Length: 167
Image (tube, rainbow, N blue to C red; front, side, top):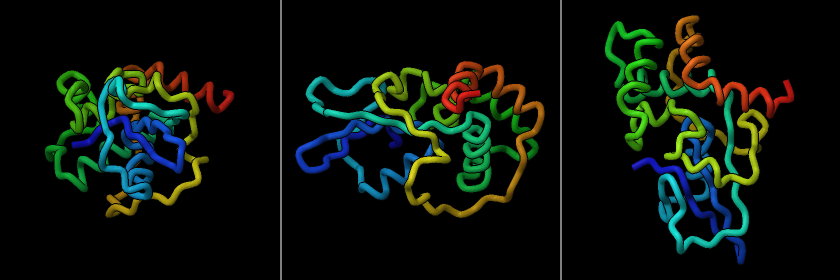
C-alpha cells in the first residue's frame, strides 16, 4: 500500500517524511529503505520526531507524471480517454482512496497527505537525490484541456508552488 507519512531514523534523530505522490518520494523511500512506520492523514500519537520535511513538485508536472505512470506503467488509463477525462474522473471518484489515481493527483493540501506536518519544504527540481529508475513512458505534453483542469482543481497548489518560486 502506498502511504504518505514515514519516520526516518538517523542516529539519535528521527525525521518525519511527508511523501507527496509524484514528487520524488519513492526515490527517498527506496534510498532509505523505508517500509515501516507509515501512516496516512496524521502521525500516530506515539510517533516522536524532531524534524519534518516534504518535496513539492510543479502541479502540472505532477499531474502529467501521474497520468503517464498510470497510462504506461500501470495500464490503468482506458484507450481513448483524454488527459482531462482521466483527471475529471479521478477527482470526482477516488481522491480519498489511498494508492488510487485520484490520491496521486489530489491537492497536496488534501488531509490524506499530511502536508501540514512538513516544517521544511523542498522543491522537486532542487532536491539532491537519485531519481528512482522506472521504465520511461513515451513523452506526452500536457494538453490544454488538462492544463485548464489542473488550474481549476489544483488552484491552491498552483498558487502555493508559484509562491515558493517567488513568482
